[in-house]
Length: 150
Image (cartoon, rainbow, N blue to C red; front, top):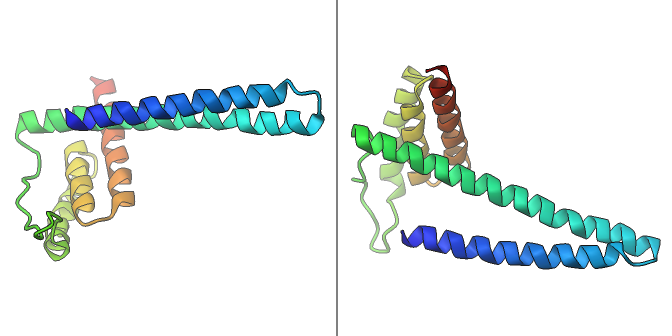
């Protein structure tokens, strides 16, 4: 719940920033000078891209949370048993060793969203956020394709 509050606060701050930026872009678009109009158009595009990115990230988080709830209800979430440093970070060597198990499971069942979800968690624990997000996007895509068929 605390995470959702922070996400909402950051999203509200971003929306405020995007509104102010769009307003500044509009002011420049209304200026009589051609260079100001060009700059205004460029500045006006920033909020458009910002809104697109915000919607995309919030939707990604909501879909990821939905899959986590489904997997938890099935008893299929990976257990959080990795050792941690005194600062609370996961020990990288342990995460790397555990990762192989989830990679092999995803390779054995390449069309199962559950195995890709768990692989995403393993990537994240190993510190590879880029691949974790890619695996999670793959899991979400597989889930959506499988539920569309039913």
